[in-house]
Amino acid sequence: MFSHFVKSALPRCEFTFTYTAWQHTRGWCGASTNLDQARTLLQLIVDRGFISPGHANVELFKRGTTCSYGPLGSELRENVLHQWWRSMTGSRQQVFEINTPSSSGSPDIVAGRWGHLRIVEPDDVRNVLNETELSREQLVHSVRMFLQRSPLLRTNLIQGALEQFVPLFELVNRKLPFGIAETEGQTCQTLNGECLAPVYTEKKFAVRATAGVAIVKMLKRKAEVTHGSLVWFCSPRTSSQWLDHWARQRLKWWRKFALVPSDFSSSDVSQDELEEVASRGVKIYYKFPWGQEALEVLSSRGDCELLQMHKGVRSKFQSRDGQKSVAHIVSITGNIDRGLLAFLSNSLQLHNREDIKQKLHQRKVLKLHPLLAPVKVALGIGRGATMELRQVCEGLWQELKEAKISAWPGYLETSPVPMEQLNSKYDEMGVLFTAVISENTLESGLLQVRSRDTTIKETMHISELNNFLSRYISAADNM
Image 1: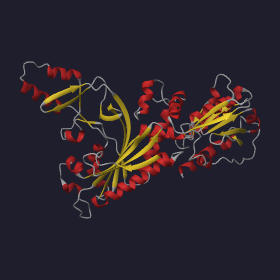
Image 2: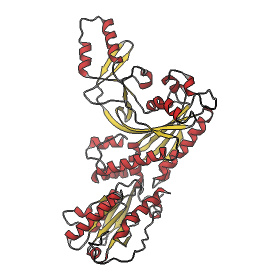
Image 3: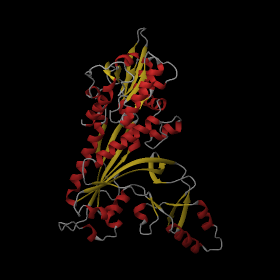
Image 4: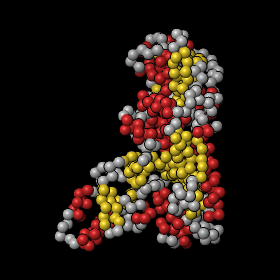
């Protein structure tokens, strides 16, 4: 593997780091959860490249909307999305993936099911409104016709699943239950951080027709939210049980990746907060330092949306067993961006320690779950011939890349940095392990590996690193 870089190969060494090192730190935290910790977290995720700097960008992220992510934030977001998707589609064969457009120009779509916002070009709106020779009635008619030709915007992902129900129902031989899952980033007009309706660009207008009058407005406040959605179709008599089932599964999933699982909780949605079509609802919450916020919403929605979408033709919904009842819907909608912030907040640990001069220092560590950590290992160089050591690091980095293990090229540091300072940096980045390649590696093939969670340093053969990391991550996945 790297025999051309090492002078001799040693027998394989036993390595004692195990996944339980991360587990043993769960459930305790070195600092109280307060606003000071919130400020520390937000500053840390900017300093370490999870999100781009700037007050406006940090506020977007804090509100649970998509902001400008840095390299670590982008990787973490992809890991959260991947695990969310696996939890929906990997556990059951009856869950199908779809990808539907966020707007529809189809004349068969009824506006009430897609919301009342349509996308139009500003110039087209001006042309319609500038027809001064038309009477008021003619102008209203012209606007109505213009709006009917414009694409409608959906306000959630449920509509796409409703449209796909009939062909997928046939695909499963008209047997229930089954589910339809989709993820998408939606651009939204926001009010107090809540997504109201999607919008494409600042050069587009959102138009709503009310009481025969066209209301044209520019949606200036925009924020993109990444949503994950599962629409579960089941028989009417089992819909309540399925809602309870999915509520338990979703809370279990969020807690699986948590350092402090008790920060995640669930509760029933009050009747005042329920959507009009929903009979019951459950929310999954995370306790942020600034207050509790919802990560996912689960709803039992009955059959009215399905009947409206397909114009009440019940023959399309009859199962093979002769049941004439229409499938009921249980929906799950998750805010992936807010979930990312929840995992970052939950993983932050602050430790106070004194140096040899009795000076107090604070060690900040992002103890992200091994499956979520954006970087699994950082590669650094110790004492020795720099060029030869970098060659070893580059070969090792390429091998890890081929194994799909994310590695940080610390060996590219242009100025010498004390190892203790680098370890602090990597802890704040959430890096699981730091591997240091030195002149000893060139001579014997041995390198030093430090654990983020225990800070223990152990020695292992360079040929063992790839397999060790794979086993460690696999053990975390199986817990």
